[in-house]
Image 1 (cartoon, helix red, strand yellow):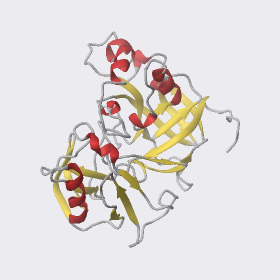
Image 2 (cartoon, one colour):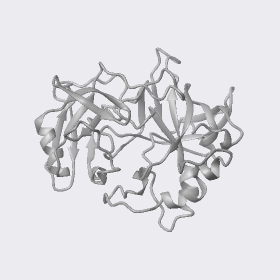
Image 3 (tube, rainbow, N blue to C red):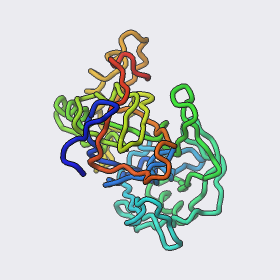
Length: 313
Protein backbone atom coordinates (compact mmCIF):
# COMPACT_ATOMS: atom_id res chain seq x y z
CA UNK A 1 0.00 0.00 0.00
CA UNK A 2 1.13 3.53 -0.68
CA UNK A 3 2.05 5.68 2.28
CA UNK A 4 0.42 8.77 0.82
CA UNK A 5 -3.21 9.09 -0.17
CA UNK A 6 -3.64 9.02 -3.92
CA UNK A 7 -5.35 12.01 -5.50
CA UNK A 8 -8.78 11.20 -6.89
CA UNK A 9 -9.70 12.23 -10.37
CA UNK A 10 -13.38 12.16 -9.42
CA UNK A 11 -13.64 13.41 -5.86
CA UNK A 12 -11.92 14.52 -2.69
CA UNK A 13 -9.67 12.19 -0.72
CA UNK A 14 -11.42 11.64 2.59
CA UNK A 15 -9.13 9.19 4.33
CA UNK A 16 -8.05 5.61 4.42
CA UNK A 17 -9.52 2.28 5.49
CA UNK A 18 -8.14 1.70 8.99
CA UNK A 19 -9.96 -1.50 9.98
CA UNK A 20 -12.34 -4.07 8.51
CA UNK A 21 -14.67 -6.33 10.49
CA UNK A 22 -17.08 -9.19 9.96
CA UNK A 23 -19.45 -10.76 12.48
CA UNK A 24 -20.20 -14.29 11.19
CA UNK A 25 -22.80 -14.99 13.92
CA UNK A 26 -25.11 -12.04 14.45
CA UNK A 27 -24.48 -10.25 17.77
CA UNK A 28 -21.42 -12.37 18.64
CA UNK A 29 -17.85 -11.08 18.57
CA UNK A 30 -16.39 -9.79 15.36
CA UNK A 31 -13.26 -10.72 13.45
CA UNK A 32 -10.77 -8.05 12.43
CA UNK A 33 -9.51 -8.51 8.86
CA UNK A 34 -6.70 -7.19 6.70
CA UNK A 35 -8.87 -7.62 3.60
CA UNK A 36 -12.53 -8.39 3.04
CA UNK A 37 -14.35 -9.84 0.02
CA UNK A 38 -17.37 -7.93 -1.22
CA UNK A 39 -20.76 -9.45 -1.90
CA UNK A 40 -24.01 -7.59 -2.59
CA UNK A 41 -25.28 -8.58 0.88
CA UNK A 42 -22.17 -7.43 2.75
CA UNK A 43 -18.67 -8.72 3.35
CA UNK A 44 -18.35 -12.45 2.81
CA UNK A 45 -19.24 -14.38 6.02
CA UNK A 46 -20.77 -11.32 7.68
CA UNK A 47 -23.94 -12.19 9.62
CA UNK A 48 -24.42 -15.48 7.77
CA UNK A 49 -25.56 -17.14 11.01
CA UNK A 50 -28.23 -16.28 13.55
CA UNK A 51 -29.11 -17.68 16.96
CA UNK A 52 -32.86 -18.09 17.32
CA UNK A 53 -35.08 -18.85 20.31
CA UNK A 54 -37.77 -21.52 20.54
CA UNK A 55 -40.10 -19.37 18.45
CA UNK A 56 -37.53 -18.85 15.70
CA UNK A 57 -36.93 -15.24 16.64
CA UNK A 58 -33.38 -13.95 16.19
CA UNK A 59 -31.49 -13.16 19.39
CA UNK A 60 -29.24 -10.13 19.79
CA UNK A 61 -27.30 -8.43 22.57
CA UNK A 62 -30.29 -6.18 23.15
CA UNK A 63 -31.85 -9.00 25.18
CA UNK A 64 -28.89 -11.40 25.49
CA UNK A 65 -25.77 -9.33 26.27
CA UNK A 66 -23.87 -12.58 26.97
CA UNK A 67 -23.65 -13.02 23.20
CA UNK A 68 -20.77 -10.54 23.32
CA UNK A 69 -18.67 -13.23 25.02
CA UNK A 70 -18.97 -15.70 22.14
CA UNK A 71 -15.84 -15.74 19.98
CA UNK A 72 -15.94 -16.94 16.39
CA UNK A 73 -12.96 -18.16 14.37
CA UNK A 74 -13.03 -18.90 10.66
CA UNK A 75 -10.48 -20.97 8.69
CA UNK A 76 -7.24 -19.16 7.95
CA UNK A 77 -7.97 -18.72 4.24
CA UNK A 78 -11.73 -18.13 4.51
CA UNK A 79 -11.36 -14.44 3.70
CA UNK A 80 -9.24 -14.92 0.60
CA UNK A 81 -10.92 -14.17 -2.70
CA UNK A 82 -12.55 -17.26 -4.28
CA UNK A 83 -11.78 -19.56 -1.32
CA UNK A 84 -14.35 -22.33 -0.99
CA UNK A 85 -14.83 -24.62 2.04
CA UNK A 86 -14.40 -28.38 1.86
CA UNK A 87 -15.86 -31.08 4.11
CA UNK A 88 -13.15 -30.43 6.71
CA UNK A 89 -13.72 -26.66 6.93
CA UNK A 90 -15.24 -25.47 10.21
CA UNK A 91 -16.28 -22.32 12.00
CA UNK A 92 -14.94 -22.60 15.56
CA UNK A 93 -17.03 -21.10 18.36
CA UNK A 94 -15.78 -20.48 21.90
CA UNK A 95 -17.27 -19.02 25.08
CA UNK A 96 -16.29 -18.93 28.78
CA UNK A 97 -16.96 -22.23 30.53
CA UNK A 98 -17.90 -24.02 27.32
CA UNK A 99 -16.24 -26.70 25.23
CA UNK A 100 -15.20 -25.65 21.76
CA UNK A 101 -17.97 -25.96 19.16
CA UNK A 102 -17.11 -26.74 15.55
CA UNK A 103 -19.70 -25.89 12.92
CA UNK A 104 -19.11 -27.32 9.46
CA UNK A 105 -19.01 -24.74 6.68
CA UNK A 106 -20.63 -27.29 4.40
CA UNK A 107 -24.21 -26.14 4.20
CA UNK A 108 -26.65 -28.29 6.21
CA UNK A 109 -29.63 -29.92 4.56
CA UNK A 110 -32.13 -29.47 7.40
CA UNK A 111 -34.47 -26.51 7.00
CA UNK A 112 -35.70 -24.34 9.88
CA UNK A 113 -39.01 -22.71 9.02
CA UNK A 114 -40.46 -19.69 10.76
CA UNK A 115 -37.19 -17.83 11.32
CA UNK A 116 -37.57 -14.10 11.89
CA UNK A 117 -35.25 -11.16 12.37
CA UNK A 118 -36.81 -7.72 12.65
CA UNK A 119 -39.26 -7.31 9.79
CA UNK A 120 -38.11 -10.41 7.88
CA UNK A 121 -39.71 -13.84 8.12
CA UNK A 122 -38.59 -16.92 6.21
CA UNK A 123 -36.67 -20.18 6.24
CA UNK A 124 -33.02 -20.84 7.11
CA UNK A 125 -30.62 -23.76 7.28
CA UNK A 126 -30.54 -25.52 10.68
CA UNK A 127 -27.03 -26.27 11.96
CA UNK A 128 -28.16 -29.28 14.00
CA UNK A 129 -28.43 -30.60 17.53
CA UNK A 130 -24.83 -30.19 18.70
CA UNK A 131 -24.91 -26.46 17.94
CA UNK A 132 -28.40 -26.16 19.40
CA UNK A 133 -27.34 -27.81 22.65
CA UNK A 134 -24.22 -25.65 22.89
CA UNK A 135 -26.08 -22.34 22.57
CA UNK A 136 -28.95 -23.61 24.75
CA UNK A 137 -26.49 -24.44 27.52
CA UNK A 138 -24.61 -21.16 27.28
CA UNK A 139 -27.69 -18.92 27.18
CA UNK A 140 -29.82 -21.03 29.51
CA UNK A 141 -32.81 -21.21 27.19
CA UNK A 142 -33.76 -23.27 24.10
CA UNK A 143 -31.82 -22.00 21.08
CA UNK A 144 -30.82 -23.07 17.62
CA UNK A 145 -28.13 -21.87 15.25
CA UNK A 146 -29.35 -21.21 11.72
CA UNK A 147 -27.62 -20.11 8.52
CA UNK A 148 -28.99 -17.84 5.84
CA UNK A 149 -30.31 -19.92 2.94
CA UNK A 150 -29.39 -19.21 -0.67
CA UNK A 151 -33.04 -19.73 -1.58
CA UNK A 152 -34.10 -16.73 0.53
CA UNK A 153 -33.74 -12.99 0.01
CA UNK A 154 -34.07 -10.19 2.53
CA UNK A 155 -34.62 -6.80 0.88
CA UNK A 156 -33.47 -3.69 2.68
CA UNK A 157 -35.94 -0.83 3.09
CA UNK A 158 -36.83 0.13 -0.50
CA UNK A 159 -37.43 3.71 0.62
CA UNK A 160 -33.68 4.06 1.13
CA UNK A 161 -31.96 1.47 -1.08
CA UNK A 162 -34.32 -0.22 -3.55
CA UNK A 163 -32.92 -3.36 -5.15
CA UNK A 164 -30.43 -4.10 -2.36
CA UNK A 165 -30.43 -7.05 0.03
CA UNK A 166 -28.93 -8.14 3.34
CA UNK A 167 -28.49 -11.38 5.26
CA UNK A 168 -28.89 -11.22 9.05
CA UNK A 169 -27.45 -7.73 9.56
CA UNK A 170 -29.84 -5.31 11.24
CA UNK A 171 -30.95 -3.41 8.16
CA UNK A 172 -28.22 -2.78 5.59
CA UNK A 173 -25.21 -4.68 4.18
CA UNK A 174 -22.44 -2.35 5.41
CA UNK A 175 -21.87 0.02 8.32
CA UNK A 176 -19.11 2.63 8.07
CA UNK A 177 -17.79 4.74 10.95
CA UNK A 178 -14.81 7.09 11.11
CA UNK A 179 -12.07 7.04 13.72
CA UNK A 180 -12.59 10.79 14.02
CA UNK A 181 -16.15 10.25 15.18
CA UNK A 182 -15.07 7.71 17.79
CA UNK A 183 -12.30 10.04 19.00
CA UNK A 184 -14.73 12.95 19.29
CA UNK A 185 -17.07 10.82 21.38
CA UNK A 186 -14.30 9.49 23.60
CA UNK A 187 -13.14 13.01 24.39
CA UNK A 188 -16.52 13.51 26.10
CA UNK A 189 -16.58 10.22 28.01
CA UNK A 190 -15.07 9.57 31.43
CA UNK A 191 -14.16 6.08 30.23
CA UNK A 192 -13.37 5.81 26.51
CA UNK A 193 -15.04 3.01 24.56
CA UNK A 194 -13.54 0.89 21.77
CA UNK A 195 -14.98 0.73 18.27
CA UNK A 196 -16.24 -2.80 19.00
CA UNK A 197 -19.16 -1.23 20.88
CA UNK A 198 -20.54 0.01 17.54
CA UNK A 199 -19.90 -3.09 15.40
CA UNK A 200 -18.93 -1.42 12.09
CA UNK A 201 -17.72 -3.23 8.99
CA UNK A 202 -15.49 -0.39 7.79
CA UNK A 203 -13.52 2.00 9.98
CA UNK A 204 -12.08 5.00 8.13
CA UNK A 205 -9.31 7.22 9.46
CA UNK A 206 -8.11 10.61 8.26
CA UNK A 207 -11.39 12.51 8.02
CA UNK A 208 -13.10 15.00 10.30
CA UNK A 209 -15.42 13.71 13.03
CA UNK A 210 -18.82 12.73 11.62
CA UNK A 211 -17.76 13.54 8.06
CA UNK A 212 -19.37 10.22 7.12
CA UNK A 213 -22.80 11.69 7.92
CA UNK A 214 -22.57 13.62 4.67
CA UNK A 215 -21.25 10.90 2.35
CA UNK A 216 -23.79 9.74 -0.21
CA UNK A 217 -21.31 8.19 -2.64
CA UNK A 218 -17.74 7.08 -1.98
CA UNK A 219 -15.09 5.10 -3.77
CA UNK A 220 -12.91 2.49 -2.04
CA UNK A 221 -10.40 0.77 -4.32
CA UNK A 222 -12.59 1.51 -7.36
CA UNK A 223 -15.72 0.11 -5.71
CA UNK A 224 -18.66 2.46 -5.30
CA UNK A 225 -20.59 2.57 -2.02
CA UNK A 226 -23.70 4.63 -1.39
CA UNK A 227 -24.47 6.13 2.00
CA UNK A 228 -28.19 5.54 2.36
CA UNK A 229 -29.15 6.28 5.97
CA UNK A 230 -27.59 7.36 9.24
CA UNK A 231 -27.34 4.46 11.68
CA UNK A 232 -29.83 4.76 14.51
CA UNK A 233 -28.32 3.19 17.61
CA UNK A 234 -29.97 0.81 20.05
CA UNK A 235 -28.59 -0.08 23.48
CA UNK A 236 -25.94 -2.55 22.26
CA UNK A 237 -23.19 0.13 22.42
CA UNK A 238 -23.82 0.24 26.19
CA UNK A 239 -22.77 -3.43 26.51
CA UNK A 240 -19.13 -3.95 27.49
CA UNK A 241 -18.01 -6.41 24.81
CA UNK A 242 -15.39 -7.95 27.11
CA UNK A 243 -17.71 -8.63 30.06
CA UNK A 244 -21.23 -8.77 28.60
CA UNK A 245 -22.37 -6.23 31.20
CA UNK A 246 -24.54 -3.30 30.15
CA UNK A 247 -24.48 0.30 31.35
CA UNK A 248 -25.73 3.70 30.17
CA UNK A 249 -22.72 5.01 28.25
CA UNK A 250 -21.94 5.94 25.55
CA UNK A 251 -25.62 6.36 24.61
CA UNK A 252 -26.28 8.98 27.30
CA UNK A 253 -23.45 11.17 26.06
CA UNK A 254 -24.36 10.60 22.41
CA UNK A 255 -27.90 11.75 23.16
CA UNK A 256 -26.56 15.19 24.07
CA UNK A 257 -25.10 15.88 20.61
CA UNK A 258 -26.10 13.06 18.21
CA UNK A 259 -29.86 12.87 18.69
CA UNK A 260 -32.34 13.60 15.93
CA UNK A 261 -33.45 16.59 17.97
CA UNK A 262 -29.94 18.06 17.75
CA UNK A 263 -28.95 16.97 14.24
CA UNK A 264 -32.26 17.65 12.53
CA UNK A 265 -34.13 20.24 14.57
CA UNK A 266 -36.43 20.96 11.62
CA UNK A 267 -38.02 17.50 11.98
CA UNK A 268 -40.26 16.11 14.68
CA UNK A 269 -37.96 14.28 17.13
CA UNK A 270 -38.42 10.53 17.54
CA UNK A 271 -35.82 10.01 20.24
CA UNK A 272 -33.25 8.47 17.89
CA UNK A 273 -29.47 8.66 18.28
CA UNK A 274 -27.15 8.39 15.29
CA UNK A 275 -23.61 7.09 14.95
CA UNK A 276 -22.28 5.80 11.65
CA UNK A 277 -23.49 5.57 8.08
CA UNK A 278 -25.36 2.60 6.60
CA UNK A 279 -24.09 1.78 3.14
CA UNK A 280 -24.74 -0.42 0.13
CA UNK A 281 -22.28 -1.50 -2.53
CA UNK A 282 -23.10 -0.66 -6.11
CA UNK A 283 -22.15 -4.12 -7.31
CA UNK A 284 -21.54 -4.80 -10.96
CA UNK A 285 -18.92 -2.06 -11.09
CA UNK A 286 -15.56 -3.68 -11.67
CA UNK A 287 -16.83 -7.10 -12.71
CA UNK A 288 -14.02 -9.46 -13.54
CA UNK A 289 -11.54 -8.04 -11.04
CA UNK A 290 -10.81 -9.07 -7.49
CA UNK A 291 -13.69 -7.85 -5.37
CA UNK A 292 -11.84 -7.11 -2.14
CA UNK A 293 -10.98 -4.03 -0.16
CA UNK A 294 -8.00 -3.83 2.16
CA UNK A 295 -6.69 -1.89 5.11
CA UNK A 296 -4.87 1.11 3.71
CA UNK A 297 -7.16 1.60 0.71
CA UNK A 298 -7.91 5.24 0.00
CA UNK A 299 -11.45 6.53 0.44
CA UNK A 300 -12.66 9.11 -2.06
CA UNK A 301 -15.85 11.11 -1.65
CA UNK A 302 -17.71 11.42 -4.94
CA UNK A 303 -20.90 12.99 -3.63
CA UNK A 304 -21.83 14.45 -0.28
CA UNK A 305 -24.44 16.56 1.43
CA UNK A 306 -23.76 20.04 2.70
CA UNK A 307 -25.28 19.54 6.17
CA UNK A 308 -26.44 16.74 8.50
CA UNK A 309 -29.90 18.28 8.36
CA UNK A 310 -30.14 16.85 4.82
CA UNK A 311 -29.09 13.33 5.80
CA UNK A 312 -31.53 10.45 5.43
CA UNK A 313 -32.66 9.06 8.75
